[in-house]
Image 1 (cartoon, rainbow, N blue to C red):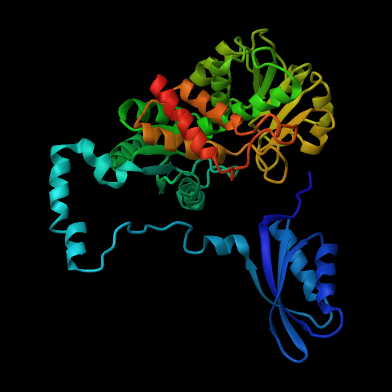
Image 2: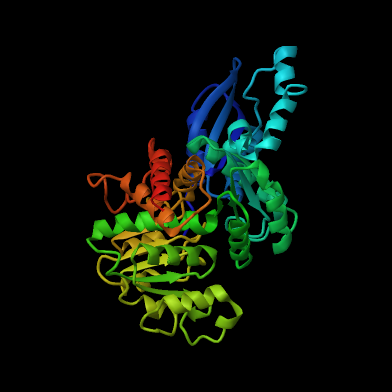
Length: 464
């Protein structure tokens, strides 16, 4: 699957060009001939015979951006100046900051915000710690915690390289749900040490968002922290993904006129996300699911189950027909495919073996399990994790509203009922009149999305 030009590889090239003739239109033509897309062209300076032109270009990769720039440099009379990578420019100095909510304009205000006045508040909290939610940032602050061991599709790149991702996560919390979040990138991948550190910093936060921690350690870390802390602990790679998948599947099934309890589902991937999706689908009423990993279909006679408790759970709760063999063999006749595994493991011909009205969620990122265009030749509904195709399965649809609801409800109980409620809330934001094969989940910029999810979470907590 060839990548299309994307804003992720957007550059701005400063050019000096002749002010006469068709120099400017020639610049646009050269970019297009090189496979780029001109998204902006601004004249930032001029003289009698020269123009300074800033051209913003969407490319498909860093290599492609360099090739487009080189092509511009070959235009007669055009000189290439500064080339700016717009993505790197956005990240200069980081993407988030701390701001004071109170004015510090004079000695009186300083004395109340800090010493000596602050001592009165500290003594009040020492006497009644529960007032921390009322009198401190604990009311609305989430720690985004990672060890950098499973960052996006990049793998184990470590805590420093994970920091831009966690900054982005914190920005999304604030933008979509008004939650103040802060990245904590830990320089350890030891399970016990991570648990100790998170427990130690927990008093200052209303919730913990675990992020990009590799399986199987993430299961133990989340389980232990949920047991030992009195604030919500949410592993977004597991439960955020699962919520959005269930929401999308709810609407996709409406499109094809099928019911969750009646369809046969085949999944690829039994790691953190795959297992969480499986658990939530079962909680929501799915009854016929078969999962495959890189060793093939997971079944009850596999000889590797004793080494992995999560895999044993999968074997014991799926595959009612006790199928063996490969993913491709299991896929034949299935109604739904959900992939959270590896790129290019299926072809369009494999999708063609599925049942009529097939639903394909190929969520490996950035390269899906099957080419979406190939899948669309045979499936009724296709979703991916990519932003350049319809139906993007994006965790941003879930985690801001989920945390907003948990914080508002002051609850640390993240039950299956809470997760199902969040998924149904997301699905409900797509009205029946708007629903179609290319629109099964709302935009992340949907005005009421986070509020709707938060309200549903609060109600589910009350019901529990």
